[in-house]
Image 1 (cartoon, rainbow, N blue to C red):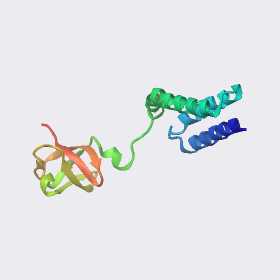
Image 2 (tube, rainbow, N blue to C red; image 1 turned 45 degrees about the horizontal axis):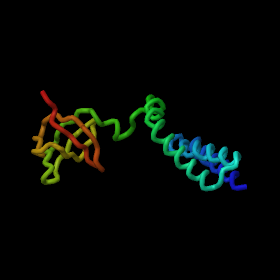
Image 3 (cartoon, one colour; image 1 turned 60 degrees about the horizontal axis):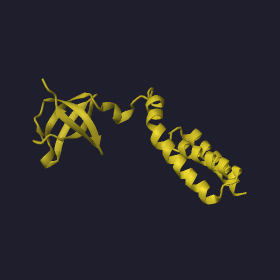
Image 4 (cartoon, rainbow, N blue to C red; image 1 turned 180 degrees about the vertical axis):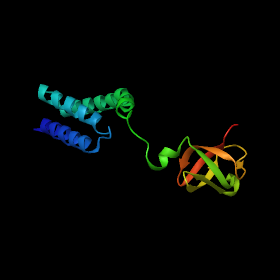
Length: 144
């Protein structure tokens, strides 16, 4: 009877994966399936749990990077994430030490800061957006 729990867990994890398509539970579903087979063969609960953990971790570590590379290839960046790599105009001096800075990108104004050691970019300069931290853009001066 306890082997049926592995089959139930496998089905539940598979349904979650199908609903989310996030490549999060599929690895554990594989582990549950192997543990189910181990239970049918006649191995005890302890062995089944150990096999579940080992197979799940191995699947996660060995195949997840490959799967993410191929499944997320067509993924388009959306919202703020699409700003990374774009250029912006500094509307107000970016002064990270004094927590000030305003840039404009695509007609929208954003708070900004820099990771540069100096932490200062003058008004009217063009910057490149390197990232987003909270509601602030991380920018650097565009090299001429």
